[in-house]
Image (cartoon, rainbow, N blue to C red):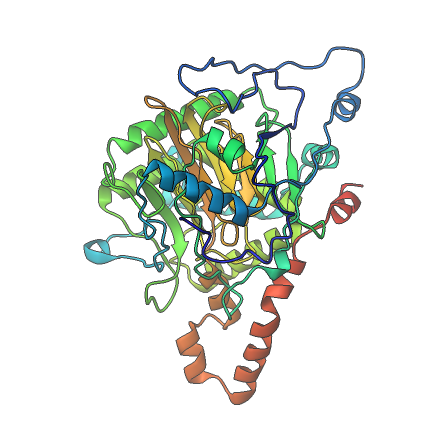
Length: 496
C-alpha cells in the first residue's frame, strides 16, 4: 500500500470522507463556453471545443466582469494524506508497479565540463543591431537599459485588471512549510508516490478540485492568512498575443530538432530542455552564466532575442503586480550582481529573473517535484505552449493545495515552485506541449547577502560578531521572506 511518507501538518485542509469521493469542479470564468469534463467518462476521442464568448448587453467591461464573476471557495473536501492512501490501495489492487525513487530530487549541480571554455550566452545586443558600428551599438544599449530601469513595470491596465481579479482561497499555512536552516532554499520533501496523474483519477478518486480556468482572466492564489502566494496570470489582452504564442511555439519546435539535448530526459520528466542565465551551485566560487555547446548557445541567443522577450516581460510584469516586495528584492539583487561582475549577462532587459528554461517536449509533462534550489519564497513563471486539448491534459497540479488547474497554451501561471509540489496531467498521444519558465536560484541571494561571497569564503573572513549576526538572520529569514508576500488589501491600496 502506498502512503504519503510524511503528514503535511502545515496544510490545514479538512478531511475527505473516503467513502464518498466525488469530482469537484469550479468554473472561474463565464467567458469560457467550452465543455466541462465528466470524470466518469473515458478521455478517449473527446470533443475538442475551445471557444470564448463575451456576455452581451450594454454594461461596461468592468461591470460585466463583476456581474459575471464566480466566487471560488476553499477546497473543504480534500485531504492529501487520505486520498494518497486510497489511491495506493487502488493501484496495489491493479498491480501497477511504481519506482518510489523516481521522483527524488537531485542536488543542484552546474556541469561546466568540456564546454567551460566557451563564452557565455549574452543577449545584451539585439541581432538587429549587427549592422551598426560598435560605438552606436553601445550607445543604443545604454539608452535601452536606462529606459528599462526607469519604466514602471506595472501599467495602468495591469493595476485595473488586478483590482477586478477574483481570488482563489486555500487553507495553506505558508509560514509552517519547512525550509532549509539557512532560510534561502527549500529542503527535499518526500512527494506523492504510487500516483496516477490521469485527470479522472485526480478529481474522481483522489477528490482534488478542478479549477476550470479559461487561461485569460487573472486569479490570485491566497493562503489561509490571505497572502498572495501565486497567481493564474492569464495572458495580455493584446490582439497580437495569439501570433506571438504561435511564433514562440514554432521557434521551440524548430530549436528542439537542433539542440544537443534532443532525445534526453531530466529528473522532472521525459522531455528535453535547456536552461540559460545566471546561476550558482555545484561548488562554484562565484555566480556565472550557464555554459553550453556553441550550437546550443546560438539557439538560446536566438530564442532570447526573439518573441520570448515579450513573453518574459509579461511574466515579470505580473510578478511585480501581485508580489511587488518580492519583485523589488529580485530586481535589487540582480542589479547588484550585474554591477559587481560585468561578465554576467541577463537573459532579458525588463525581466528581474536571473535564469530561464526552455522545455522542448515534445510532451512536457512533469512529475511531482519541488524546484528547491530556487529562492524559498520566490516565484517561478510558467508559460504553457503547444498543441493539446487543455480540457483533457496539461493541467497544473498543485498537490499541497489539492488543486488541478486547467492550463491552456499561451497562458501564464506564477507559483512559489520551491515550496509547492507541482506536476502536470499527461496529454494525449500525438499532442505536443512545451513550456517556458523563469526563476532565480536562492544561492544568488545568499551570495549577495554575504557581501558577494559564498558561505565558505564568508566564514573564512568573518569576525565573531559577523558570524553571530548571520546566525540571528538565519533564524528569522524564512519569516521575513513570508512577510514579503502581499495581501489583497495591500494591492488594493496600490491600485488607487
